[in-house]
Length: 283
Image 1 (tube, rainbow, N blue to C red):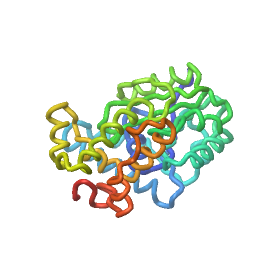
Image 2: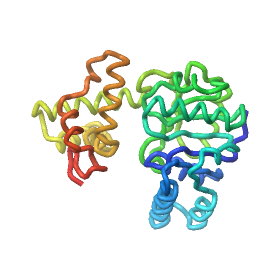
Image 3: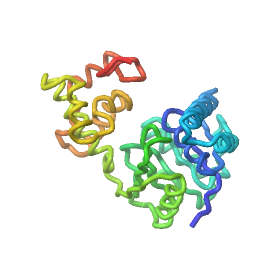
Image 4: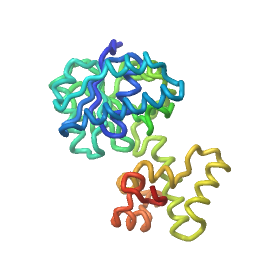
């Protein structure tokens, strides 16, 4: 099984910097790469802020924070992940972009380097087809915020080998995650189930069944959800929710995933959730 010592994380946005955070805190050297000028540096600043909060809450020792930050290097060049034994892609959810990245990684990285995508819904099998040695490609679906959420959904593509799954298991356990392993299917397990609840909650608002606050409270207090489905949609981004909904509806043909008209209208109006300042709630 491959010995992972250095991890490359592609994309320094919400998911990327969170993944880099947990990897560095677990003792891995990390290359945080983003092609947008200054983006990796901004990601590193967010990691430092989150670690500082951990220190303030006495969940992270100051020495552990300092050591984790020292393990992270930032770059705008994809070539700088060439020596990593594991590369985790957290780029925007566009199939063409992900296939391009995995084709380039195949040329840069060692033939046995583990290549993972953090996609929440796209076909891992299709992504893997763009890589040489596709048996080393798999999904590592982290959850937001990465440094707080315990779950890691490992997704086996049609091509993924047993060695890659074993390496992913060992890595996930070392960074402190609880793993579930699922086969490549639209939406996997978590996104498919979570989106079904989220879209039904939007339909209930659309029909006037209850307010967003009351729907969320019902799920939080009645079913133990840590965050109601509409709050979660705002956090993820309603534009992201819409894109995943359209993808799953096209792939599965299940009317449960047909995008509600209210969701379409909100996205067209620029009400994308927390990142735009307003979604089902105001921020």
